[in-house]
Every structure is written in C-alpha cells, then in structure tokens.
Image 1 (cartoon, rainbow, N blue to C red):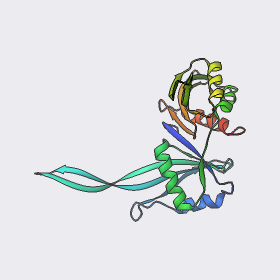
Image 2 (cartoon, rainbow, N blue to C red; image 1 turned 135 degrees about the vertical axis):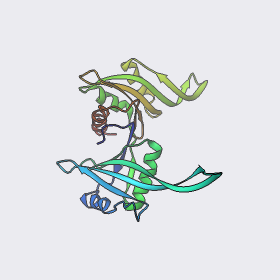
Image 3 (tube, helix red, strand yellow; image 1 turned 90 degrees about the vertical axis):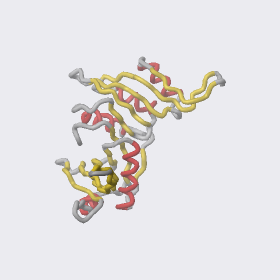
Length: 228
C-alpha cells in the first residue's frame, strides 16, 4: 500500500478470482514505446495475499506554443492509477477518488472480463464495529438523502453531529438514506485523521499523511467484519 494518498475506493472481486487472474494482469505489461496502456507489477506481500500494481495509460492532449505566433500542438501525457488486490478477501483497492476509480474499474473489467461490484455499507452496523477498536472514533457529520421534517420538508440534509451516541441513533434511524459519513480517528500517539466514507466504499482523507495507510488498513478490516 502506498504511504501517501488522499482517496481510496474498494470494490468486490468475483469469488473465483485467483492467482491465475493475477498472472493475467502481470502479463498485460505497459510498454511506453509500443503500447497506449498496460500494467506494472510493483510488489506483493510475503504471504502472497496482497498484490500491488500500477495501471498506466497515454492520454492525448492539445497545448499551445508561441514561436513568432501561436501554434497549436498535440502530444501525450501519462496517467497512473495505483491499486492493490487482496486475494484472501477478494477485494481490489484503488488509490483514487470515486470518478477515477470507476473509470479504472471499467477499463479493468474490459481488459480481463473480471466481475467487480461496488460495496454498499450499512453505516449503522459499521459504526459499532469501528468504535469497538484500539482507535478513538469521533463523529463529525452525516449526509442524509431523503431527510424529512414533520412531513413538511424533504431533501438532502448535512448534519454536523459531535456526540457519538447521537450519531449512532441518526445512523440507525436513517440507515437506508445515509450517503456519507465523516469521522475522525485518533491513534495511540495522538495522530488524528479525518476521513469521509461514502456508502459505496470510497474513503477520502482531509490530508495526505503517513498514518493514512494504517488507518485505511484498519477501516477496510472493519468494513469486512460481518455483513456489509
């Protein structure tokens, strides 16, 4: 896993995903000379359960250059998406926000014909799992789509909630309508990271920090505990 990143998104892989599929990805090698896209194998864990890759693709661009007059030129830039495959839990973790991750997954599926699907988290269940851990969890915000007030007002409501018990009650009451939650996570050393979690498994951090990697590992492990 990369040590510094701002966003990451989880997707489920097919239950029959195996080392055979890993080898197919390794064989789809990016060559800057004669290919427009491909993959680079970065590393794997000692137990061979985690595999790290980069997906590279050339993107055409148009730019202007002034040489005794304005000249329009065409060129290419290289875009990169890093991702990790967890073979044991059959998930793929893309180190990017939702839009870029969804684009990558469409490419990934078209290249290998591998079934992937997005998560759908039940925040009401997950907040109990998160708070029962070695980290200090504080509530920040919940985004409710379909919030109603006395049947007079209906809409998308952003609720800032600083009390964790009130937060749990809101998540339980509107469990089918919660789109995003924001929480802060503090470790034993006093490091605090604020993270936004989308119901489909996108994690966005306020800052790119070294401890984000450990916190993301923690979040993913808890997301996989029990039913989603």
